[in-house]
Image (cartoon, rainbow, N blue to C red; front, side):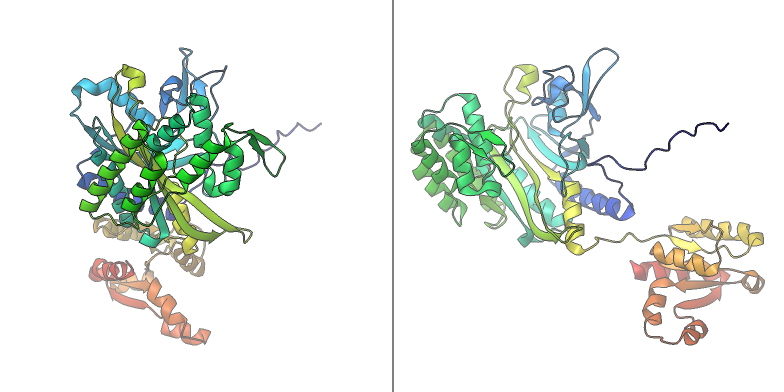
Length: 490
């Protein structure tokens, strides 16, 4: 009688979660380092908060059922309080500011980076776990604080390597549309939110689709019906005129918006804030093509109270099945003057911007074909078991000189070891056998040069005899020879 063999689990990653290897991690680290340097150059302090927050601290996602898992990943602690993995880095900042306000220098300027988690449907470049890198100013109600955040975002994208023509950072102010709707008699908050959600879909659905969502509603291709905002036709016309008010320059857009808003008090306040942002951006030499006033930008999150910004990447890439893939938003933010007040009851102005690091890295890699290849270490070949001690001594000497090095620890022969070093994109391989030990020498293979020279050698015998890219040097010159090769590869 045979015992039942337990079934083996299927090796699979959950949808929306990535296994990232060295190349992707290096690209993300490079972006984080570049953007962090920009933030620090503006005097922002680095802050890190924990991965979990109490669910009621996340604002939008309050527990209204047994498990508050709409949009977040939540669990119940042993004290029966619901905790959730942080949805973004802004809500934790609001909690931190409220908890430590008396001891903070104000305005409090901080930047932060780290993973965030969203329990949403994954898609191209859209993951359930991804990196963000934020900068926020808490405690200033000046529109110039918004302008500074925008200028840092523009500078950060340039530092990360994003071409100026590859994205647009678009700016609006929530007060404009709020004022327009109030003037049109739309005062109920749920109806206003439905309008914001309809306008937010302009890029995807086009004007006619937005008209349907502003009115009775819309049925999509699958037959599913989305209830509309229920606006009258005159109000719908006003909203469309508003979202189509963008012009070639920031000043021209403000002039057109002034005509559309029609003198509402809240709308005029928003126009005044955008005018001050425009002036500050000009003085900081942020070009018209870098920061554009676009009335169709409303941002999806509900806590924005004034200026809003969104960066949209225009790089077109091709997916696994040859389909066109557009990554869309790679960052955004805005003013959220009510978020800290949820904890304190006192209105505290705040503004910030968040880089979608993972999506930006994925878009750049996809546009480049494969992204930046991460160079491997120098590889010391293990050709003789009796010389393993010598191999480790060589590796230690090279590492002490600041040259990443590993000893090959597989069981294959020389040809397979060289292939291993090639696959690691190693700059050099160190070859030592009994002859080298006896002669006091080392043989070093410049792998980049070897690949280049091998391409011009058609005959295998000539390649073996010529040993392209390979040199033998005195043992005392090991570090100098390897350093020369590594620095050339870099």
